[in-house]
Length: 149
Image (cartoon, rainbow, N blue to C red; front, top):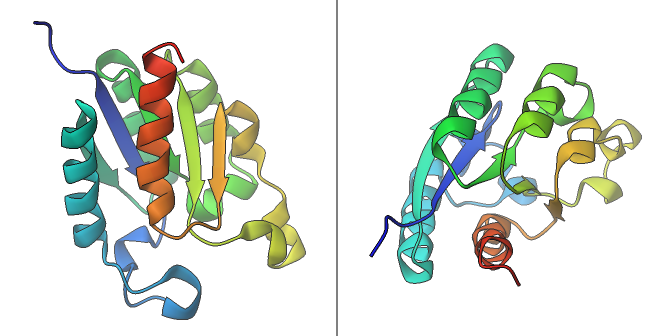
């Protein structure tokens, strides 16, 4: 039996403050709790996951580029960088597997500037407005893509 497919989960600015930052918009689940949920779902799906979070754009680019060498798929929440980061968009476009972009809030019903998602142009899947459950859905969808469904 071969090794399990690996999914890299990369989170951008302020995601480290989940649970305390604007809970009316982003919910009360902490990043640590989300990580445990992702590990559990990955195990159920026959996947492994790695988790990364940074508030720094260059570190996110490096994480995506590095994951391209080790991961079969990518789940990314570029957060505020999603609206304008060419560097993150380019890294996502260069990723050699399927990419799912996740936004916890329903960005299309928020301020006009949030409706512009440059990074989503490099994603195979876009999930917005499902809360932190969106990450779990992203894992399931990437698993289906990797399995050829």
